Amino acid sequence: MGKKDKAAKEKPIEKMTATELRAIAMELQGITGAHGMNKAELLTAIKKAKGIEDAPSKKSRSDVLIRDVKVKIKALKEKKVAFAGENNKKMTDIFRRKISRLKKKTRKAA
Image (cartoon, rainbow, N blue to C red; front, side, top):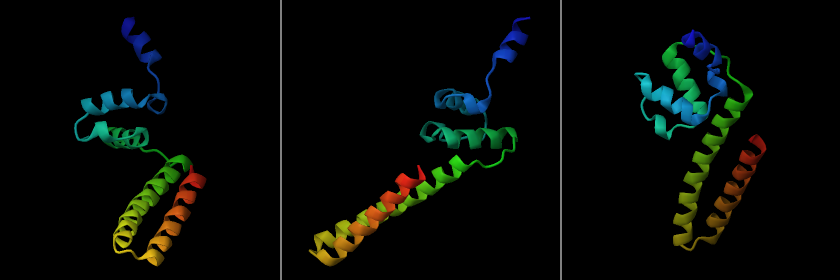
């Protein structure tokens, strides 16, 4: 009787916290780096490991978009620092504006 109650009270994967998802991911084989993943990444990894198919949601697409834009921002910041070291004000200003535009995109996507 106790096992049935526990199974009935178990909440769906989407409603679990990131900490609970990490605990599940640690138990499953084939998932590495669970401590460095966020909730969306943990959900996809667990579903993939269990063989559960799910339709992509809008929120997860924007999350991927934001991550890609942040990678671009990081690369542009490195280039900006290099030009600042060479005292090239024109190129430094160009990269500063590009970074600013990309940051605005991340805010709109969130």
